[in-house]
Image 1 (tube, one colour):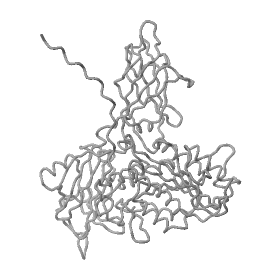
Image 2: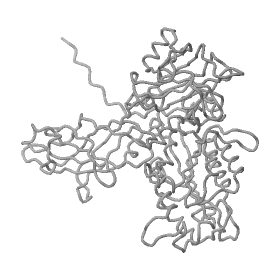
Image 3: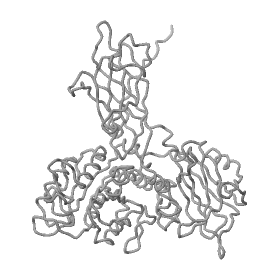
Image 4: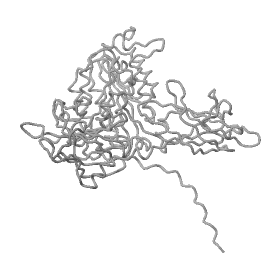
Length: 590
């Protein structure tokens, strides 16, 4: 994405990662979009993806009574399952003599959209002789087991009130008496953001025959002093006293008001070799003081060796609350999953072990099955009816013609299958009912997905669609595909593309705006936003830092939020339960 960490429309000249929320965001210069500046840095360090701190609260009802002369004294332990093993993340306090405990102690967990996060809850009756022992020191094997429950974190956060009630079971999976309820709450700080408008005066000119073309880049400084870019302004051409459009930084980007930030001013160069015009270290708190004082802060040369005449000013500074991804999801917004599978002849004869479509009798999944299963396992919890449109392309179907968009379930009227099991079953069946052919065309399946998304908009704005395309080769309808993607960029749709096999996927990367330039149609229209994420399975697996699924899904929450915010679509108001009866007024005094 070039030296300025850009993913914008004009090859590096637009604002990126500024968190624009206006109706025109992503369309005009300086209006910014998702945090592409930070994404670029974190992608290289295996740190990308939505990570939201959540606080878990617990209660239980109708627990078994394990004590003879009193009620049980319950404590809850919560675990997350990592690589098949349990990792304890918290214990509650012990509630004495209660079968209806409402625990006060919370557990903290980071919600990560792009992975499945299994949770295990176990409740124990703590023996009286251990009541003075700190809960962390308790030997659980010495306590009476009251039951356990299981869920995935995404099942909790997709509920309207972020609460999920589960039936308790014994260690063998048989039902036991009692239930437990877990409630997840997003910390208020994750919604906080700061909108700022910067301008500079008296910048040093770095050009010979004209004035410099300055832009600002803001980075967060890590504990090891590594600068992590979080946004940049647009480029102002031929100006030494530039005024930039507002940028918005979320608390997740700047961490805290007192954490160090690095503000750098560069002279833009189309080659990506931008020249530093000055830098300064600051904090959000100091920037607020700078705004209030109406004074300017001097830039310094690299590493602070020399004070420069150029100064940075703040014209606006406003703290505000932004709706988060979980605000939308928990208020009834859905991610509707769709999949399209490449059945072109270049995959090889499905009956042969070397084929990318070979179904291994031992149960070992091929690359197509891995991608289908991995992505659908994550997204299924965000799709209420779990009915997924599933298509194939590039095959000669039983009717005799080559089709570039046919239903995997062999139905002529309905393209949907039930659950990821339905996709896997329909995929396997299709391998033996069609003949692999070609060429590789994406346009028809993208247009079909866009048609569904467009139809949905007419009936509401709470559905966002995700199309997964799995392919082994380079497309032959590149411009038609670009035209389809540009048209679809106005719709609630994201496109995930997985490249399987050993083909050269260089051409495919042009579909993903991570390269620094959004797509342009044959008529000259530029995509409203980046809606494509391309991942070559072979390269990601060789890297080993993140999974293919994580790489595919890491940009999806940002694309979702960009669509909703730029169109002024807000989460639905929370659904409150009926208020409990008020306490009666005190009797009148005589």
